[in-house]
Image (cartoon, rainbow, N blue to C red; front, side, top):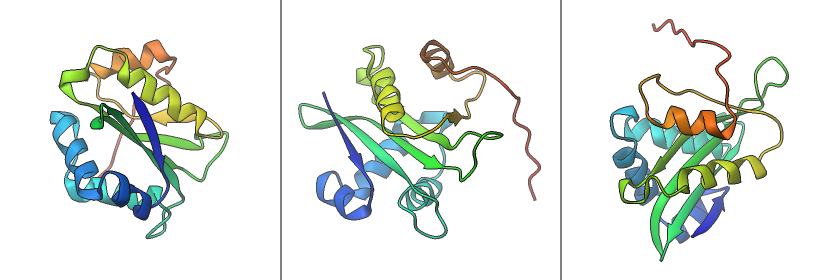
Length: 146
């Protein structure tokens, strides 16, 4: 397995293609995912566009085929809120249960400075993986939506 980091659209487009990356997340996040537009906005943020603070994307390939992806964004905060937020991580169902998700997440830790937070729905089976990696539940997120 090879994991590649992307910091801009040029490198992403050359290696995988932006549409392929977005489609992968949209497909493999299943019911826990977002719209393609939301995923693209997240990539913009990771690449420092439209007011984004930066971050990066990771893509894991097995035999040249996309098997897992991750998007990490910087929060611009420190201490009271972690400096980074792991926004999306997805693994192709054919490769789940083989440690690929863990390897992508752990690689993302090597690529970041500071702490990392993530949001996960309680019924998402990936929650167990995050707990095994060392994530803990500190707060229940609540939202007020306009």
